[in-house]
Length: 193
Image (cartoon, rainbow, N blue to C red; front, side):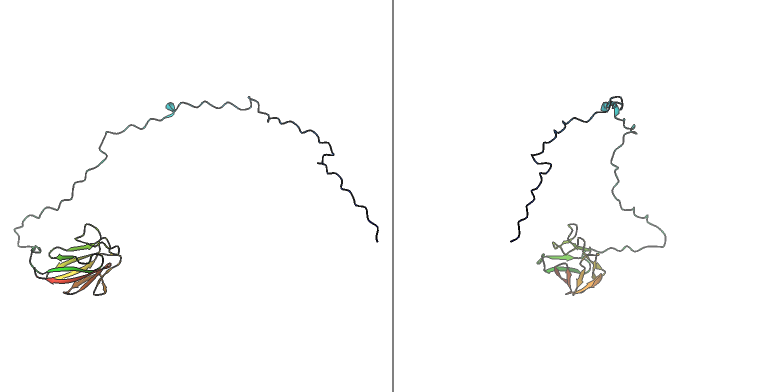
């Protein structure tokens, strides 16, 4: 058997208790610079003395300007010359009337008459025929009478206006046509006044 080798004993590390520790120096605050090295801070003035006065105001005036309401232009003076212009007015009760019947959709079952005045259709409360359908634009379409015929005009709606399944911008309506506005299907009929 081989001879055993002697095991080396570890030497004591410098931090062990067998070595006496040198005493730690006491803490001292950092030295402050001499008072003469920096000038003292200026005193803070009172707020009343630092406020700048607002500029003088011009003569007092109202903050709101009143704009007069729109008035139609005055009627032209009657001329005694030979030129005359015909005045085009729809006569009340003259000519055909139309009926729009909402056949299906959120507003099904309602009927509306169209006659001399244009019938405005849309979701906005200022329309003549108000549809409570989110697929209907605020001002979607207009049904108007031109002479003896009725026309429908799409007013730039988002989802368009269909007559008998065809998208239109403007179209003459015939008795029995089916108009689609949003999710509502309307039947168009000519009726006697």
